[in-house]
Image (cartoon, rainbow, N blue to C red; front, side, top):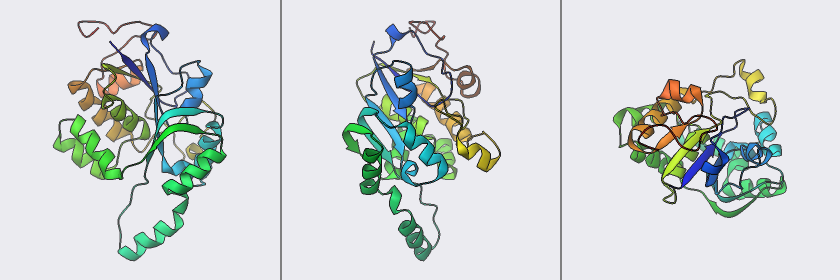
Length: 241
């Protein structure tokens, strides 16, 4: 069975046995963790357009991408928070640094490379997650309140990829911590808790009910109910292995 490891940016991620990993997918700058751990070049990476916004936390992650590469790069557009047409236009003018053309320039200037660049409307990525969750009304309602993290979008893209029979999640903790340094957003917000946590827990739990999704991280297993793949093991326990 072909196994995809989806790696987040959590420090000291728990990993399955290297022999169990056929390919890797990453989120934002977790490719730095993958490289430091000697894992293969990611076949796909989901990156939030916020990484080229110029915000301190974004610059922190953008620097970590220097010298890295990926197969397919999915650029996730920034969420439009609504408001009047005039207010949306004003925000759009300020957010030119998160448009695909600018993002490509900034990522290349940072030394990041890819084989294929893809971006879709954010609603299309939301629809993919919802579909994979069986169009669960609770999932749709929660995504309308707060969309999933980039890591969970990477999980959805991996499940939908078609080349893999199962997906293992590692390096996700529902926090803002990064393996490649201190995330400035933690000091700015006064907490390490991710705003996406509630959505991520719900979505990962629903995905695990419908797909061959596992995790090596205790916190993901405990909070989202994703079946556990013991760290260092070649197979998950039970019939699914």
